[in-house]
Length: 359
Length: 232
Image 1 (cartoon, one colour):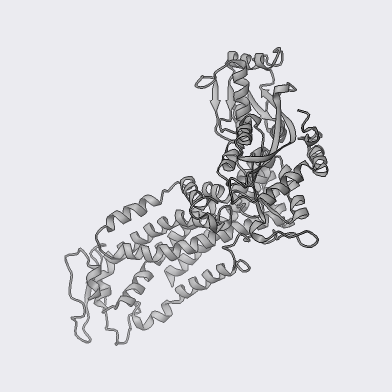
Image 2: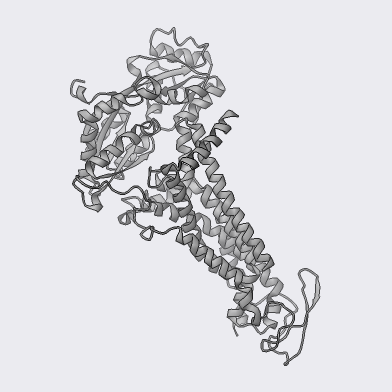
């Protein structure tokens, strides 16, 4: 009997199917204590009670059918996504057509691991469609921050990297993890803080003195603490100033992106190091002023590089190379230099590819 | 507070102007939710009913596992799914990382325990109340199952609502395995994260309103269905 698999730990069990034809039963619902008397006819009898007996199941099935219909309607909303297990999930992002040479589909995707700043400023949203139009490649921009982007390169998970931490990039160039290492552009970092500048950073002789002044003032400093390019830069500045901020009461590690860090610094009336682009995007919501800018050590230098396909066979070398060449081409460099002028009245990035080799 | 107004304004503008990018993101979020929920339901319903009504050794352990699974941290699931799907991971050759499919996989892992647990609890309760009664009808396995499913239809819809809520609002796993790639894997939640980090709070709010509207509409619809079910 199949029922034995459903055995119930109840005292009042009885044998099913022992009733005679036409016999009725009184049911007591133990759990609720509710006593309900109901004539329960056999399957072959007329069901006059209206309880969901087998004869009326068809009628009661309406809800099930309705649910099924809805379910299929929802799946119908997926129309055109029959091939949804393929990367082509989203309509409207079809490959550019015409004129351009089409790479084979397998080699079409180019994974670009990059820092959040290039995405947050909108620069990549501006450049990538142009590249895709020109070459037929499809760029997957994964914006993760410089630390993780470099790590993705080290594991061969990305094809091309665009990052801004030269001191962390150098080891990868030296050990052959990445090739075709090219200077693309720079912008600059700025130190921002309360407008009245309690630490007198503005008056400091040089950047080192400025950092020391922040540490000494106790006004507070908010660090991103996320291994991003900005965080790495900030740690370099502390090191140069001979200050070890780790664990100090005035030092906060936010563990978040640049925008969030700016907001936290704003709340705490503390100082922080930020890239100019994010600061400009957030300026309206901040009561923070630029207290230090223009020092040479505040330059924020972006390099592009392709992950070495000889080391990682799964890397799309052709696509990566195409993207590197695209970024350093004179036309793209011009676009980079113009980007952001209409919105902020000043460029967010300064093209540098022409300067390469003169460093 | 004027931010809220400009956010609402922006939301209406997006809807009226039919901003194609946002609408595509909207559609993608809905599709991911439907797929993830559908697959979870296909797994969770039979498994939940089975765990709810069938006695076997280890049932309690399995139930505890699924109950604990209701609280799975999305970022942890995202990380593990990513580990498997990465190019150089065990399933790398499927090329699934940074695709909507990857997000669906992660969401299924997150939602299935919710459905299993809620369905199992409902099924166990219904069985306790009605086991005798079903048998007294001379129920065959099929009719027993049918009656049981019919009995738990309300909690089942509640489970679906809970699962939908999880899928549509999830951001951690979607960010890690999807990568928030424009035009491909950007969902409403990851788009909000991006707009916030861009300082475009009004736009983030606008997308938030759309997400809330979607969530509310679907939940209201399911609730309506639930009430219909109760009366039917």
